[in-house]
Length: 328
Image (cartoon, rainbow, N blue to C red; front, side, top):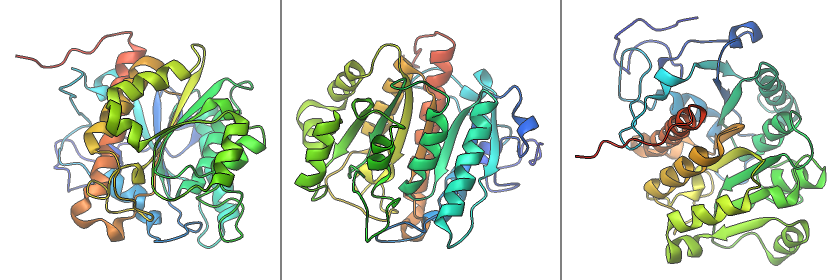
């Protein structure tokens, strides 16, 4: 269903991602390559709320107009000319009922995957990783899905304030419940003052690998991305989990648990591009955008561009093409 008129500016018309067609029903997903899905919930945050408004803010963070197009000058591709991308609307969430919201998110992602379409989920707090990664992982055998997580926090607690499936614990339970193998979880940009030794001990016991922000600062993001690629099995499928607090608050102030000393926007975009170019994409989430704390939509804009970067790289990967940057 087309919900926007041709050639209208970005600030006019319906609020689908990049003015994409709206595909609300399962039958509308037929023939699509990628489906954008919103997961608007913040019931399970431990600090600042507001991520329930994240999906809408990310969708609106575009300054172009007209039909969907986004020519990537660093890759030489417009993903919307190469891929069929639709907006599947938002998952069914219930304010104040996190269990019901997780169920709705899982069902929406399962519906997308069942149609043979790659889901890109816009959060929402990071607790959505449990239902959306579970739905994607169900499509693969044990050990066939690798998750690369960009995050300042490992999110491997057993619970946060007594809540088991919190935004600080999804990866603990994904691994403990054998939905994801520990040696198929790779984390990038950890820094700050959590997790504690107890969580790191568990992570080591499960084979989880991580690359601290200091490693990025010392070696550069290109070298770290190469290390991550070496850690991903050749026959694996890649799910990207991007928590915007992986970025320094200077680049992403609109998030619930900001931590100074993080990645630059360029580092994050570069790493996402590299990983998807080489490994493709089985699914993706971009989480923890909190518009009430986001002056001038800085965080929503970089989150939007993270999605565009992944789409652009995926278009080349699917087409078995190499980047053709616009050099002189």
